[in-house]
Image (cartoon, rainbow over all chains, first blue to last red; front, top):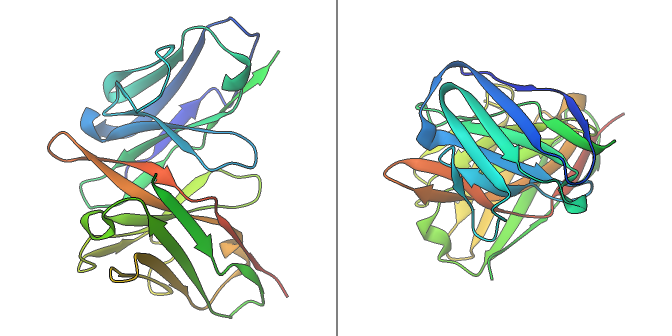
Length: 109
Length: 122
């Protein structure tokens, strides 16, 4: 079973700053199977990035994803007030199981 | 507009059973695999189960295997999760999610319901 480890656990930044979130897999993950989600308090998660680097419909271009193998990154180029939330990476495994990272909280500094 | 609406959550004692439902609309339900994902209070997301569009194939997380059963009724555009032998650690908000296909084999969840809370406590 692939384990996804996200870092840092919490990222304290100010609006306008750049956020860099990491997702590391315990073994190599196909880039096609890596996604990122945003979740705000009291809301369901929302798909941001799929296939490691493709933005989902309606996602602003300040969100970008990159990486391959075991190391993946979600970057928010300039934080807007609505971007403060928890972010999860997720992979779809070859055994038809799914795994989420434990999440990174982006909070206002 | 794609919509998913869960129902059936509640408070029950350890060892009890419950069936969750997820009513889908706005897309051809039978063409898409569907999943259940849960989130314990204050915790992260945990994948629970997935079912193929036809309902033939199902997969489960080890934590629920043998206790939970996912199913669907494509004539009613409804997804189900039958939960038996419930434990305190099953307490969570349960979300249904629609699988989004991309490239040749990529999958992600592009639509989520609002969730339904299941509390297992004596």
